[in-house]
Image (cartoon, rainbow, N blue to C red; front, side, top):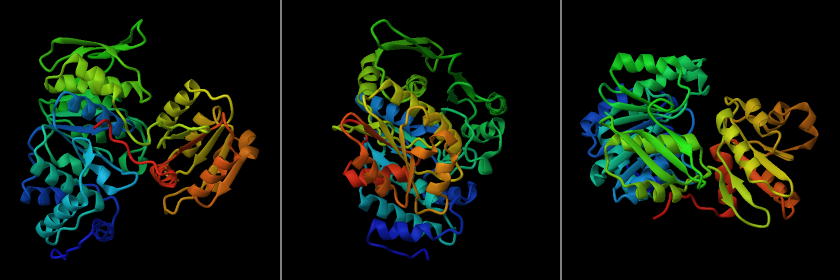
Length: 429
């Protein structure tokens, strides 16, 4: 099948989705073998690997925008996408073309011969192939699942980032934080810095000691202080151990810890940036589906929050941005998520619930989602067969002064984005 050829990206993706018997098949041997034949294991430019339970894409978006503000060229690979596959591979903040991806897929398919690859492995190799041709100054790769056995881990990073460790994907990564931390610590490299978010399990430090990675830990080596001007100040250390402080950094609607982590990762990278690059870059960050507000008489808030940590942040933002009326929540989630905890975090800020089914084997049914809500609130719930149906009813019921919030999964947010004609955002151009 290595001679397979398709003329459209849609056809390539449909074929790739059915190529491998398993959707997730963790391990590096197959994908590394193809990457080696294609000369992709040592990308040019400063290479960042970013893992964590939450905030990976957000942290990357901040670093990417700051670097582009400072005049650097960038390549970014993240997952999943919201509206189009192209969002997974960006050059200088712009998704690459269908043609570029099709060319990458064709080359991968020629080289792999009888090696079977998953959808994510094809995407990983396509990103590395496109970045090899473009040669950006910096490359950001988001770990899709775990770390140690994730396809992105075939390359050697100059710097690794682990944003948070929370319970998620337990069937793949382990049932406790120490096990999950050990898997995510697999992106560390000997002698290379690893920037860590707060409250890391002990397994992270143990693994760093085993590998000889250089830990740069939030709360120990770097942090932030609120200033009287309503901004915040970063304080941390450079790659050569010198103190660095940056003032007048703006507060934005994205998780604050990720802002601090992003700044420290760039400071640790040794890339030269002015204080103004950091201030301006952070103020210009845009990322779809992360507290994305669509203004109007009834404002719309889109957020892909799908685990307790992310739901807690969404609830905090909703409390801060109060509306005079009611909050209508449209929700669709996967059954393997901690649905009950997610809903509990939002329970006090949502007035009316609209639960929806998704056309996916992993999805939790709307009826079961409604049942997971606290018993006192269940009379305020409605269930629908599609996200779009739930959204239309929420909009119909909402009056000026109310707001509609859509959260729980990438597909739920993507369906509503398509309904209202909202395009994906990738920062300033």
